[in-house]
Length: 260
Image 1 (cartoon, one colour):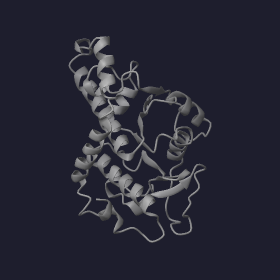
Image 2: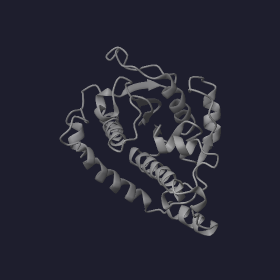
Image 3: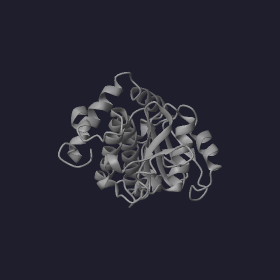
């Protein structure tokens, strides 16, 4: 699959950067496939290998289902477009820059950041108790989920410090109160795995609560902790990669224009 991706690589882009571009564009299309989009709003970003202060984010003029590797915009941690001369028409959203640059700066372990505004995600983000430990999907995040209070549209640079402080040094998922969901992964496939499970956990909770919140049954503490630890087994990365490879077939990247 790497060779298939590389065949359309522009001469002025390194193989390493093109590989990240292709994976990130594919993730945008998978997010669209699962219906986790909000028109052109929300963002997915990725740090470029070997470039601690350079990362890719979406051209704001593109819908997620049509994202291509060449559509992604390379910016620095100040939000400056690094290929301005060749692609002056590309647009970067400021709120996306504020949220993603904060986490890329503070958490070098997180290569890819995903932020969504789905109905289920916003609903859980607006509930006092947040995500309940009621499903296997939710227990993936038990004691590994951060929360950040809503401060308005993320345009103020000083909010970055509070985003970073709330996420902490080890969590890879955070609920943005009254706003949506945010996850980070060491790889693009891992970020996809996190957002898939978090979105499904939120959907399951809303569905269960529709039958009456008082009827929702929660596992006991021992089972919660045990299940959470099972998700962190050493073999999990292989499953993450297998799921990613399988999911790519949903967008059929070998016959679409995603890797162009």
